[in-house]
Length: 335
Image (cartoon, rainbow, N blue to C red; front, side, top):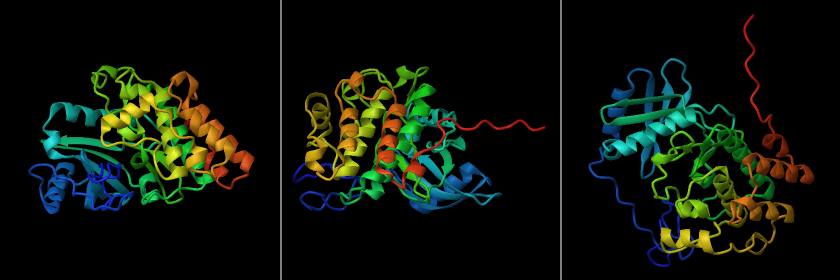
């Protein structure tokens, strides 16, 4: 949300503005929202006896997320439930179902998999593994920065997951700190393909509306143009910039102002706002933020290679976590 006093953008969960420290207004809740206990009861009814729903973890403007366990196996799960007033809207139900369809086709260590999808009445939900390491947004709460090595590692892992998606025709379109999750060992995975577009269904969200989160939106996305994987590369550059400096490169009083800056204004060089950023990592970050997609890394995999090269030069211990075989090993047939 934007601070009503100084206009600075803050995360939705922040109680005070990160710049002027003014108290932020509480977000208005959706209409006719059920009490949490009733929501859990409704979700249990919709999911049947397959899952044991325990409690609500959190949520945003589109969905709530619940902690659950697989009833038979006991494995921890996260169940994402579309808010019921949105689930009554056909377009939103379609968008939510497409998240499940898009992510279910992606089997990669750096993509949070979709394990199940269901709908019963006005309850629509998807089931994912529960990653207990929190999100990149959690790691940067309070404008905290990450070490260059940790930032490069997280970005390299996210880039590898996105490269895998791009090669299968899926562009994420909403890469942001909330959508990068960590497991207990700190390995990053990309989640929430809710507004992802594929070459098969691009028209559904290419209707002139620039869907996405303004601070992480590429210039071409802000202008409502057709997108490819280089738009996600730009968003990864925003993440790198914020991980190193504590702030995204562009801010403004509203979404339009932020989008205008993405299109027309050059970002302040990362070396100025983060003097401790290594020159090699600064160059990688600024290349991602080129206005012209042709001047960025052309594939997310190229960005991952550059970041891993940076870690090699630094002889960083995080290198082992960042590096993995780019293609999963196929399962061997049973004899």
